[in-house]
Structure formats: structure tokens, C-alpha cells
Length: 361
Image (tube, rainbow, N blue to C red; front, top):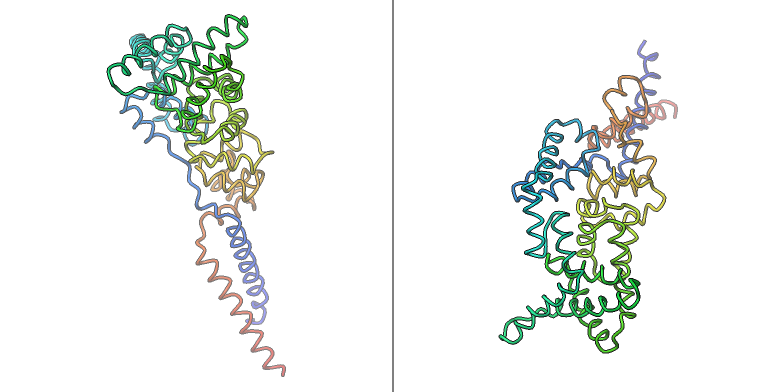
């Protein structure tokens, strides 16, 4: 009777060893246990406390379309509260005035009013007058503002002269001046603008600065002012700016949050996944930078099969779905148990083989 049970023991043990080895091999490629969805609520609430309603709306809206966030009533309620605040008359009026007086704002209406004043030559003359006053009173002169205002005046004259042909350049200059006020102008770009302003003043031409300003205008047209400012701030040089522009063409207005939640690693992984669907990369980003790393290691199809929207491991396990069962084991069985199973199983086979060989020889 004991002899009859042995084949079944061997089969079961061999199956356990095989499954354990497969699970360990899968984890060697990428261990999906390291992945956990980003909970957007804590950061959203932090932004609300800081009265950064625009950023709170943008951040929570990025995640709200995914079931794990959308099914949470607190998420939907919080988003409704944020939108109600942003749409209120008093708030909109406050932001409009903020843009006109301070020249900057975190809301679209405030940014529009600030940019509008800068787009007109009045804004450039105003800023040059302010910096001139600082100079004559031995105060600190902002050379970047002087450079941008000088370029702005030349662009204004060129716009009239060329019947609007230089409008994109003038728009870019206004965007950069806004970026300077909002502390979103990177150091490399500040230095470059000062140099180009000197060249433009000497030649009365904006031809050389077109290379620098054209990507900025294209970025603005693609993703809008807020995203443009945040993306420009992340650039390190003109080459990097062009990379960001290409990145934003792919991910549009979600580019900024995508870079934020992946700690800029989305730039790297988007290149490693050139054929991956945009929506799948965005979904992977809800696990942070490790989500994109996992997709890169495992491949898009395999990652989405294991971590995608339709993954419901508990339910599908009971339905006998072997693939889902494998995923469940992959997520829940500790590695030490798998190693132990392989070691003890092989030891059992070797021991029995040794006993059999000893009897035969």
C-alpha cells in the first residue's frame, strides 16, 4: 500500500519544485511584490492645506480615472470640493487680481492676466523702469528680467514690422518672464537668455534666439502654460528641453504629474518602451517609478496581464484560472518558502535515489 502512494508523492513533490522554480525565475526578472499603488489622497490634502487648489485638482485628477481611486467615495468627494472652490466667483476674482498685481498666479485666469500684461510692450517698459530704478538706487538688478524685457521690446517691434511673424517668439519671452517671477526658470536658461539678449541688442535681430525659443512655444501650444512652466523648470540644457518637448508630445497635459510621481524616471522608461501604449504607461506610473521599471523588465503585455485593470486575483483564483492562480502565488508566497521547497524536495529525491542505488549495487 505504501508503495502505491509513492508515485503520487513523487508527482506532487515534482510539481511543487517546478512551480517554486518558475516563481523564483519570475521574481528574478522582476518581483511584483515591490509594487504598490500610489495613494493620492494624502498629498492632495496637503496641497489643499497649502491652498494650492489648482495643483490639488491636477494631481488627484491624474489618478481618479483608475478604479482603485475612483471606487473610494472620499476621492470623488474631495475632487468635487476642490472643483467647487476653483469655480467659485470669489476665488476666480481673487486669482484674476493676483495675476494683474503680482504678475503671477497658480490659476489659469491669473496666469492669463499676467501673461497678457507682459505680452504688451507696456509690461516690458514697466519692468525695465523698475530694474533701472534699482540700478540708480544701488539696488540689486535682475539681469534676467532686463534681458527678457529687452528681448520683449525687440520682439514687439519685429511683430509689427513682420505683421505678426514673430508672435511665437514674443509669446515665448512672456512665458519665460512669467517663469522667472514664479521661480521656475532653470539656471542654464537664465544664463543663456542674458547672452542672447546682448547679441540681439547688438544686431537688432532675434534670428539666433529662435533656436532657444521655438521649443518653448511648441511646448506651450501642446500642454498649456502651467505644464510648460513645470517642464521647463526640469530641463538642464537645450538638448534636455527638446527631450522634454518630445516627451510632452506623447503624454500631453499629464506629462508633469507623470514626471513628478516617477521622480523623472518616466523620461528614461518612455524611451525604453517606445511601442508601449500611452495609457498603459500611465497606468504603470500609478505604482510610481517601480511600475515603469516593472513594465520595462517584464514587457508591456506581461505587465498589464499581471497588474492591469482586470486583475482580480482572489476572484479569478476560485474560478480555476491558472494564470491568475500563478499571479496570486507570485504575490503572496514568500521566497524563503520557495527556496525551502526546492531544497527539501531535491534532498528527498536525492536521498531516495541514494537508497535505491545502494540496494541495486
